[in-house]
Image (cartoon, rainbow, N blue to C red; front, side, top):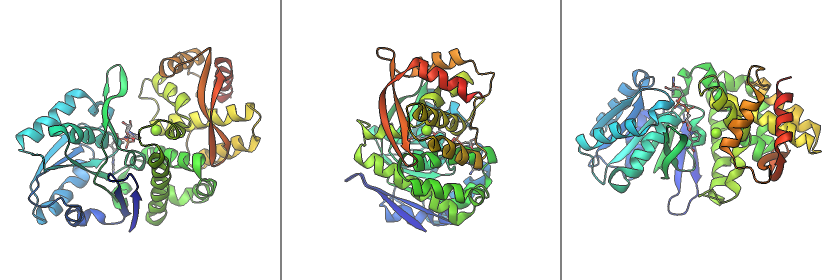
Length: 362
Ligand code: NAD
Ligand code: MG
């Protein structure tokens, strides 16, 4: 079992990563002051429920906990105010009080939704994350919780740090392969922004990681979380450094939008976005190997490295303009300096982005 502390002063919390941890959920809760006197709200989705709900409830009940369950429909649509209200209703009807805790059993969607419920219920109760996707290593660090507004993603939310994160790598074995790859995209991003050796390790272990080898998976999640934690600890509220976590996201968000939020998974869109950032960096005179190595890395994981030709360049630019503020026709971009290091460039022009988008289609 691996333990990683996310250092945030009095809001610090551990992430436990390993095999079979879910069986001991009760003792982990006790260890963190959530006793059987405290009632629990367990939030999950209807893909995860048939796989892990019974087992989770069984361990909790064996440990003597009273649990109220709320199962939401799987998918991004669960991050809405109406579903938020339904979960709140379950919490109120279930008699949760100030000393209760909300448990999120699921991926980033369940984590963001349940976390926002925990942040708002009676002005904030304790929150525990039990991530079941690889991508959720990203959402388990940083305390951002939110639901979407029809006009904008993650628009309604809070910062609410969990009491602990319990990452049982056994639960990841049932992930669809497409979700596995998409999850690795954010893990690779953490290597690209911070740690060349980790990016290299990802490349070398690709086969084993894609086969969900528990040891490698646990190390990859730990290192990915540690890098995000290092960034977030320095800048909890996104005043500066935290922006480097957005590598690939400017173009990536535009791709998701133009794809109608259905064609591409987030991880797929940002892998193309990171290819775009690498291309931009090379255009700005940085080493060509940034591009070739980034491409090799995403290629090894079966992630997309180019844009499908049917995506209209002007539609992408339009989406990008909607997402980001241009000033004097210039845009802020996170660009790689080398593998494992990025900086923030404030004078990228629309024409440069247009050119890169065209090149990504080749
Ligand atoms: P998700 O929660 O929708 O999970 C992906 C799919 O896998 C879903 O269909 C889900 O039902 C299924 N699934 C989950 N675990 C499974 C398992 N163990 N076995 C089989 N199927 C399983 O999506 P995600 O990719 O985990 O997260 C994406 C969300 O996370 C987005 O809403 C994004 O905004 C959010 N996010 C938040 C942060 C943050 O800092 N809070 C960071 C990154 C992403
Ligand atoms: Mg992301």
